[in-house]
Length: 529
Image (cartoon, rainbow, N blue to C red):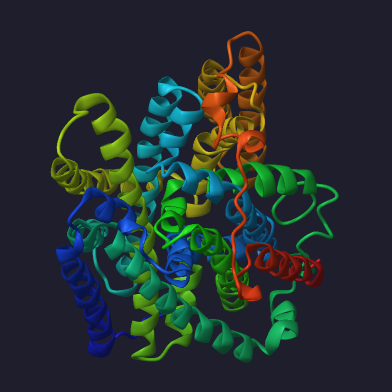
């Protein structure tokens, strides 16, 4: 355990943050006149705003607590979740997925599935996605609760209720615009909290070489060299990392999770929408260090951290290194991460519920104002359900184990459905439906058989769920009638007219940004080989 010395100044800083985020929601309330304003911000935001929000929506409990915990448990191999498990997929989203989403002006991923497959596929995915968002939102509530339970002495239930109230307030008031502008603020707060933490820690232990010596485990500082077998801290083969994490889980998350896609669609035009994931990719590279090294640094101070709780790696590091005032900034950064992730989950949930479940099956012809009100009610219900979901996390060894289990079950098969739908025009509506159902069921059954939620098991389980989805989709498609090409124009790659995105400035061109960020990613993987 690490002693915590918090004062009124730390509480004051946290209080200022609370007031500020609620104020943003109140100011933006007057601009929420239509459902598109509420759900897609009227598609009016500049790419630098949506780019930072694209990343901010991802900076939740997994990024801050989960990655630090994973680093304390697995060493630098945890960086695979950034440099192979994020950047390539973010580039793919920018160059290939955004043009499809943008051209069809869909409000959600299920909307795309309806256009490409059929109503059954869309409806099944809408229900799954709504459940998925609630379960993820619960993680952020739980993460906030355990941090403040340790650092501020609050009870688990009180901390959960507080986080629920703040998010409910500013999302209900301002919709997606409120969430997006707060995510930009939260990105800077999180960075401000983590940069000095890493710098203070590295200086204290004598730099990277001193950190290696103090931990005394050479394998904790190699990302790839020990993956020819399972004899490494993560106990996985390179194939599972590249295919299970780098392809299935990563592409499944970044390409199909509407929480992040929604941010790009809020950009002012198609060029800005394409730049959004690429702008986010550059700070994402940086977080491969900022989110991971605190876990290694605290391990040099508390070598038996695993006997206590790996999830507390980052909070312990903040409590150890930060003085009064700075601790308040660090706590606010953690708070910002949890609020960011939770708000993103809730806004994605209310969009899918309103457009893809309520409007599709309950009330098709209501006025726009009615759907705006339904979205706000869905927000309240989503937060309430997230409170219940927070207690599910207690049944898992770590946050990252829980998240990877969810990704393998919900996103891996969905990515298989998307991949075939976008690039194979022969795939049919019922092929997509039965493939998605089979892949999802495969992930659930494999987990129930083993009850193994370790990251290695999740990588392999995601591979099998994806394979099951692809095989069944192909088999059923070959014996059912495909849609005519006229119905597939604009939603299948070979039948879509490619519009060149014109940018005068070279540094704004999507392909140039993609090449730069991929080159930087390769360099980091080689350096930590």
